[in-house]
Image (tube, rainbow, N blue to C red; front, side, top):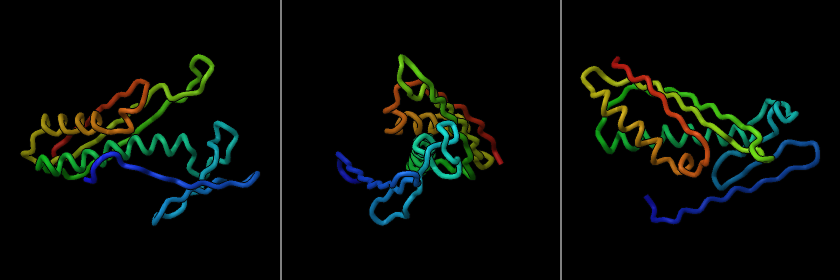
Length: 144
């Protein structure tokens, strides 16, 4: 890992009535538009969707690294993150994130240890740690 602080930069552009384009060095562009809930087309990533995806992605990528460092064998991980955007004290803000992880571990692997590492992955996610709202992690760990 590189020493802290880390710096990230995204360039954006948009014209009236068009979708926004998000760019960063060496990555494909992303087209963004308001979600259906704000009158958008619902056929592109929105800031709300990207933010929810970033929380989910951070947790699973953290788990991938933590499991490797801890030598925990696992077979697959699938999950969902659902977010609630609401109006609180006159401001729109996310009020809740619910993440559910379905983890498959090989027979003989320790499910209690897998649970602990998933909890650690969520607790060490810098995006999740930045949130000022309810966060819930549920897990379904199966040997298979």
